[in-house]
Amino acid sequence: MRTPLLVLALVLVLVLVWGPRWLVQSALFPAPKTEVGQPPPGWQSGRHQGTSYWIHEGEGPVVLYFHGNGEHLGTIRDSGLLQDLLSLGTVICIDFPGYGNSLGKATPDNLIHAARSMADWARSQYPDRPLYAVGWSLGAAVAAQLDGLDGLVLLSPWTSLENVSKDHYPSFVVWWAVPKAFDTLSRMSHHQRVLVVHGDHDPVIPHKHGLAVAAAAGIQPITLQLQGHVIIDSDACWKAVRGFIHPL
View 1 (cartoon, one colour):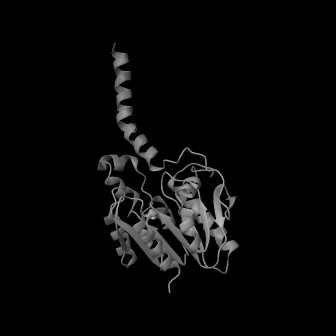
View 2 (tube, rainbow, N blue to C red; view 1 turned 90 degrees about the horizontal axis):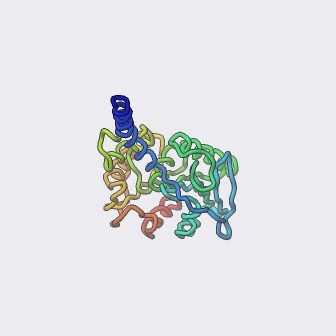
């Protein structure tokens, strides 16, 4: 009788110890299960070092767009977001590792490596054009990890993955389960031109994160009077982005 009880006790300990970690980490990068499909007319698909991307040629700067969690190129297309991006210049949208048709596993290091690799590729293809990065939510955290940009646009950014996780999980779970990654605050000293746009009633990444990131960058954020997290559906959001990338 003692052996089954010991086994049961061990199982319970493993569940208590590893269960929260598995649940949190599985929630960090929830890639859609839907098919990506084809890019819309005017966009070309490609792959660089395992990273799937869509590109639309335009005038002016080159803009890398990094999507949020639970998205891929297909959902971006279906949402109409690609149309908002067209006015920015030559636009390159990527799928993170583990998302869409991109190879690899979604981990902080892999996401950052893919973003930096695509930035290097963009510079090699367009050496005489300014390079901007635009990221929303998770994409903002990834975009902040790049260096040598002519401008950085952070839409609904967090201060760090650890800090934003504490807004949703108990501190002991965050300490145990959440990787120490995507510290956006510490990256602001690496960027000369930064735009921060955040909604004032964001239940996913609260407004306080955007305020802190903007303060670290030494700028005033643009606060949108919006309910919810998805500020990229707002015309005011893209008006601010266009004004930053194409100042009068």
